[in-house]
Length: 114
Image 1: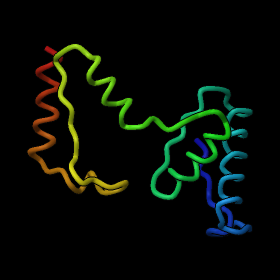
Image 2 (image 1 turned 45 degrees about the horizontal axis):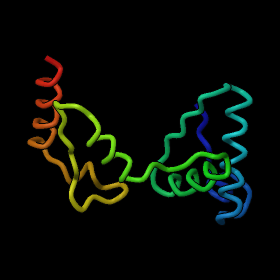
Image 3 (image 1 turned 180 degrees about the horizontal axis):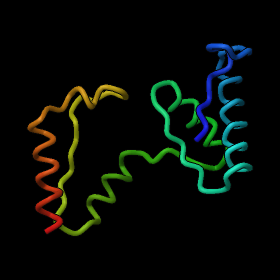
């Protein structure tokens, strides 16, 4: 695991602008490849999603658009159930679901696995 701190944040020197953030992300991805080999899994949130998307697109990766998830769902055999969180934003979907939502989702998975 590599935890990368942005340039210009915390104790790191540097300027926290798009160019330096993306360049640093590319360097971190390359370091992970050298140290650990493939595959490299990038888990990010908030600003990191945009930074990694930009860096990843320069490493021939891409972000999977929602239409591909919908196409996958449509291609799967039953049982299947899409779970869409209406009006959810980048970081707030978890706050938009309640116990009932989780119970329905987990109940479906348990029923489908039998």
